[in-house]
Length: 176
Image 1 (cartoon, rainbow, N blue to C red):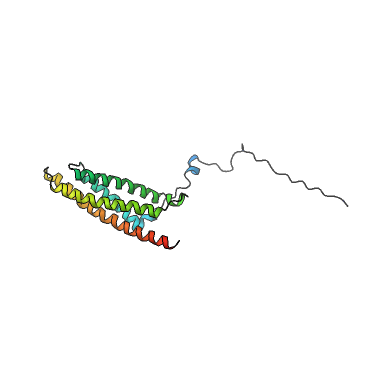
Image 2: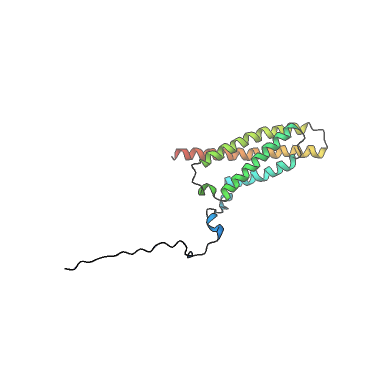
């Protein structure tokens, strides 16, 4: 009987070889970005767009701030505007789905939106009180009152968004 010898040959990896497919520099780095326009066709997405637009009106009409209440109102509007832009980009670029950090996104957005709602409530009241006592030109007084009214509208939009986020957060807790 003859003995049989089996030899297995493995190819050594060649790290210097050119890749099979040419890659662009940003293709790998930005492959996690998925543009999600469909989110802005939903109720929460439309609310974010409304918050953004109303924030622009509030900032434009309340500037420049003449009284202390207007300063606080513009602070709230600016901080909430920046926060809304951040949340818009989180949803637009699909960052929630791409990141694997243990972040409770719903609770984070709920707390953010709830704090902004309280800030807008205090801010629009102070804006209306301050602008009612202004002794400047009629045009600026009317613009500041209008800013307070748009602040009221934005307070209502943020309040409704907070309510919807609370329902979503409550529903996600029962499913776990």
